[in-house]
Image: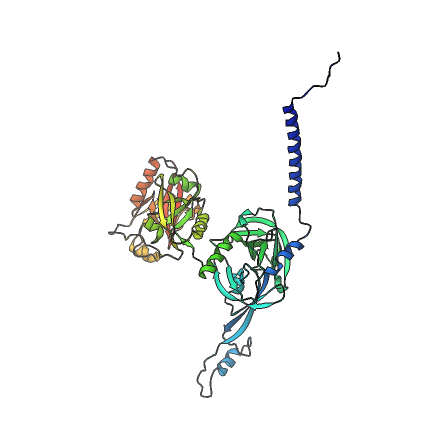
Length: 490
């Protein structure tokens, strides 16, 4: 009897095989779609048509007043003619009236609401007497200044239009990745509406401000593009074109746009209040490096080290110098820049939890934020008694007790307390860490010191305890910072 020699597969095995084939085809299709999505768009024309009516050109006029110059400017006899011209028939000197001239500037912007709110850069409209908005259609309208934020270089304008305006929404700048396609639109060099394209070259760039969060792009940005939008491929604004890095004033492919997530918060406050209202914690801080972390007993270098606590919300909440702020309102703090931005984005008068590292353990504090301002500096407690001057060389430093003569010589306040650095060995670690003559050591080993003997005692205690680093609190003028110096075994 003949039998079938073809092996029979169980139904389950066949199903698994079919499933594998289907999954493989699905992965192939997904890979092909992803590859297509990453290729350059065939055209940006559709995107331009979608957003063009919302992008505007901005022209400003400014009255500039300057002292009047004589008709012989540059002539050696100019002073003589000026003196003669400024005297009346009776020989009395006449007042010189100021002479004004008109200055103008060009920039870009974009409409964010149908009722006429427009975003641009602060430097585009700063000190302007008149602001004119030119729309893509060619229509011109005067604009009113609603508010500005010089910290992020953002300004909010308003026009009264006879009908609803086309506008563009903000996108999520945090969703952008390095390499994503972007499109810039604006008024470069006063040439009128113009489009350029490129990619996100980098994110989270910092130029000079505490609240900087720039997207770097190679899309061409030139003078006149300032205040214009940087779009993603969905027609959402993910940045405001603000600055370029260039040796010649023209685009070399390094442009910067303030990220939309920063701009949107600023714009919301300008719309509601006409000004920004950022949270204020009231501390002076510095980054924590590996040496400081070791000196403080932290397992890793992170957080923001508090160097000074003036009168303000933090002081009222019990924050102390030498505290390391680890989290703010649930956000892990990696460095001082992150803390400044996180606090600034928090609403004023809100109560937040602050986790700090203090004396080897964490502590949670509840702080009610104030409004950011320049707090008055506190001064150290006045020194009691008069010490006999003494001097000693320690750790590459020559330190001396702070006498009245030294206070006067260094221009220090009468209440200044501590040890003064009179010399620093240029080959020492202290010099590399930035210590210089004239610095005042307020604390050594996390304890206030006013005598050389006290400094030396704290140093020996640190060595006996097996510490690898020795923490100093240094004050230079109104600035205070912590410095950790490595301890050599003796």
